[in-house]
Image (tube, rainbow, N blue to C red; front, side, top):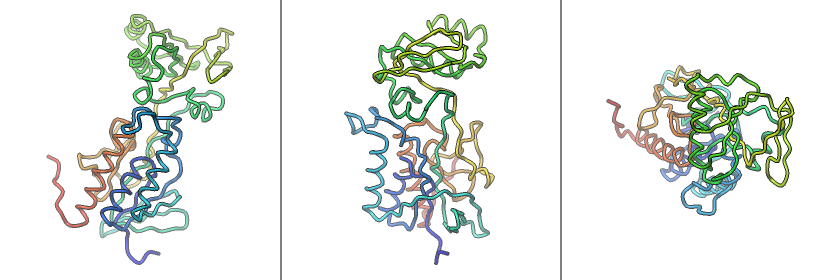
Length: 307
């Protein structure tokens, strides 16, 4: 057991957690980062909209660079999964990670979210190769003028497909055999936008030369696409926050104020787990705010309350 509590335990080693580690290390705080090894950023084949990398950067390389920068200032970064969080009568936290018991005065939750994966063969490999993508904001520009299949249904799927019209006119919305769940008005909206709707299940996929050469439906009909975008939603990794009774939004993300504080005193959140636009740059900005808030709280500097 520790001699004294950490100033902060960072849970999650994606862009948000690692940015916070850089800041807290430079604030000379006593903290530790525990990473479960499941950051969505690690699956990014190459990001072209992250400022400072005009030729793009691979997700794993970005994480490695950030971790090395944090360690340069003395950050302790370890692999581990926190199974439970509890609060003591003094307002501090106890985290259990395997057989380790970690005491911390504050917690920064940077656990992110999990994409709901489409029922397609070898999805992880397809994501790494850029054949199945999740974020048109991140990389829609790279598919300008190409033939795109959007995997989704309902209003969310349709709006994602319409957003893709920013980049290409050749879009098909595929519901993977599930009901499309669109109102007649929404179907008319799809027709006006020239978005094809396909509700049949997918039977097989043929990939050749880095392109989805053919996608065969159960009926035998074939389609070809340059890339598929999945918009089936996400699951927030917010179980630790929920266990503390922390306020969550309808999607399960942690509700925070402008200082990244949650409804649980001492628990802050940054990155995709917090209510926000799911972007690396946003996660890093939130982490900078959260780390600075933590430093100010611990040094006794009053942090303004929300109106």
